[in-house]
Structure formats: C-alpha cells, structure tokens
Amino acid sequence: MVLSLDNSDLTVRVLGCSGSYAAPGNPCSGYLVQSPGATVLLDCGPGVLGPLQEATSFDDLTAIVITHAHGDHWLELPMIHTAYKWFHPRDFEERPIVYLTGQTRWLYFRLSVQRVAIRALYDVGLPSESHYGIVDQLVDVSGRPKPVLKWFWRSLPVGGSLVEDRGSSSLPGQDIKSGSEASIGDQRWRFSRTRHGRTETYAVRVDSVGGRSFAFSSDTGPGWDFRSLGEDIDLAMCEASHSATCNRRSNLHMTPREAVDATTIAGIQRLVITHVAPCCDPDEQTAEASSIFRGSVEVARPGLVLNV
Image 1: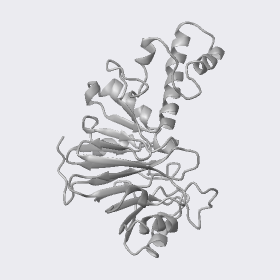
Image 2: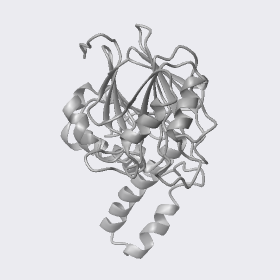
Image 3: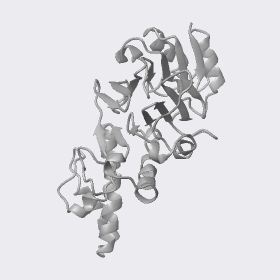
Image 4: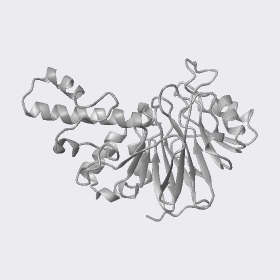
C-alpha cells in the first residue's frame, strides 16, 4: 500500500484513548501510526476494532504493537484474530506481525490454550469439571507450552517464538524488550521500559524516513521520562490518567503536571495528553498541562489525526 499524507510522512490517528476502561463514545487505547510504507496499530484495547475499520482495511494493516499486558491495551486482539481467521484470510507472509511483551504473549496463549483444549476435551466426552486441571498441565510455570499434538498448535492465534506454523491461522509474533528496535515498512520503532509496577510496559518511539519522530509513553507512573527514547522527538503523546479531581490511588499513572515534566526534560515542544480516566475532565487535564508547559498542548480524542 502507498498512503498519501498531507504535510507529513508520519501521522497518528486516535482510535480510542480512554484510560483503564472505556468512556461513552471513547474506546480504550488504540492508535493508528501511518506512513507511505506502513500502517501500524499501536495497542488494541476493547472497542478499537470498529474505528480501525473506519480508518483503514484489514488488507492494509502492516503490524500490531502491544505495549503491555493490561487488558485496556490488548483485549481486542482476539477479535482481530477472529477477523483474519474467518473473514479476511491472508497468506502467512501477508498477515500483520504482532509485536508484544512476554507477559502479553503468556496471557493470550493461556487464553487460547483454554479455549482450544476445552473444546477438544468436550468433544472426547470428558466431564467439564476436569477441563481446567488438564489445561493447567499444558503450560509450564514460565507460560511456555508443553509438547502437544500438531493439530493443537495449528489452532493457536499468535506465532513467533511460541508458534510458527505457516499453515495455520495464527498471526506471526515477535517479542519486544527494552532497547529493542524493529523496522516496520518505512518506520523505525524502538522500545523503552516505563515505570508501571510489575507489568512489563514499553514506551515507543517511531521515526519516519523523512526524519519525523513520534513518541508514546504507554502507561507509566512518575519517574520515567522521554529521554529514554533519545533526542529530537517532534511529538510526544503522554498519559495523564489522574488529576486533582480524580482520586489517585497508586503511582502507576501520571498527572498532567508529571506528563509535562516527562516531556519538558526531554526538550520536546509538542505534547498530546492521553489515557485520561473517564472520571476526569479532559479539558481540565489540558488546562492544567497548558498552565505550565511552554510548548503546545492538546488532548487526545477519538478521530483526532496528528501530523507529526
């Protein structure tokens, strides 16, 4: 696919940006990063699949990047797999690669093992109370699968280091780590771990061939900043889930002031606030950030298209 972009060779479209759970008219996290040579879905929280289809087609999706294992950032992936398996079949080499953390892969794999195994156990007539115990025997403590029959592998949805069966309906998979990089079409991606409790979570930076750069904090608490992704970032999208009027119960997320600090220290002049919890007022979040940030500030909303 060759995409025509106005005034920039890199754009970011907000599909959903509600923090932690969906707000009315606003799905959970999902962003479409587009350039002339690639269309990448960044996170795929619940509800993202609908606006994704309004913005692009299944045939044009190059890759899916999932920043961490919390459900509001990946639970639409099973629906995407269903779409490709039953309604938009493509050859293995043409399917979008899924870049994901080891924790996300483990959760998704375990969900898939349970679904496939329970169906098989039901078919052979085993009592339902025995199903879950048998499923537990199929995955070791690290989340890696134990040897099973080939038909079972062919039913799993994400490939890569766990499954690489080109005859199956799986999506090819690739694990991400802090400091790792990936070339996706004409986009260069790099990853940096944030401060999000025990959950393995990665901020991302995307560079275009034209020299434009976009950075996304994913989820993080205070103490992390955009310097971990390098210099000369043109646009920073930073989470600000909490505010003075939205009760803060943990340090897993930022306030607008903390988002500004994480952006300013990296010398970035353009900030987009995102992942605002439904109990917070997006306009208040923006006003709080604007009062202390010397660059431009706006808040992410579904349908917003940003030219990087």
